Image (cartoon, rainbow, N blue to C red; front, side, top):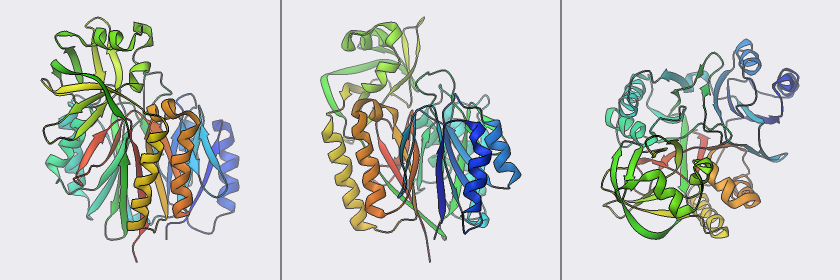
Length: 379
């Protein structure tokens, strides 16, 4: 069984004393910790504390942090959460890579090659940083150089909706444009999960008339930024923040849909940068949250998931920042549901994009999605 202990904090000055106190009260050997933290808090004290104790660290900056277990129900802002586990060191490997001059697809291929080099057959949990990074292209590159049966979950780091700079980090380094991958031995640890959105399309269909990767230049032959401003009746200054709540819904040829949230704008070119690829000539529509129905959709899927797989040691949740904005206090209901149903702790953060398994059980990239990852040891 994966044993764990979790805590939240409001300043990094608290870390040394809080960490020491928690480590004194555990009955296991700490090996791997997860840390999700506001960009307003300095990292060096945290990294040094874990490095000194030889505890590996998998971390990301966030748009809000969450921690639900028997003792705590935390949804924080400009704070941090940490979960420390006893996952055996020979059951996992952390790989960190800077993107450098590679485009997102090439970077994904590089990460796929790194998975292939692992000395055990693995599932992957990925966190990526960089506001120009294309989550869909990374996923496609990984699958292309690994295989489409890869089980992978994860998310894009946030920065408290500032849209300035995000990062991922270990106990030794910080990456502002790169990725961490936690590889877990499939023979020892089962990784499974669900991805649930609930967002619905609204308005007329539109055509993406010029795009490149995750940058959209024109929609219906009009500058993409101007189209967003017109439909949402907002100003330049309100973008991209308001655009996150009203993503484009891409209508794919296989009748599936994919949501794409705005994470950046180019005011000079009047273009929009999305968290994932938006193919040129694709048909899209705006979308929004129908409120409480989103929570009902998620809890219904969680119930089905529980009936198929009722055992869990812990959960990691990658939930889109737009869910927090759209649902407000209701967002706690879909987080608490999993913690109560499985009687297992949930730690995670609000993201700029999510990675999970789609209806075809193939890894995909999402926005506006509640992506829950379940870790369970195998006998």
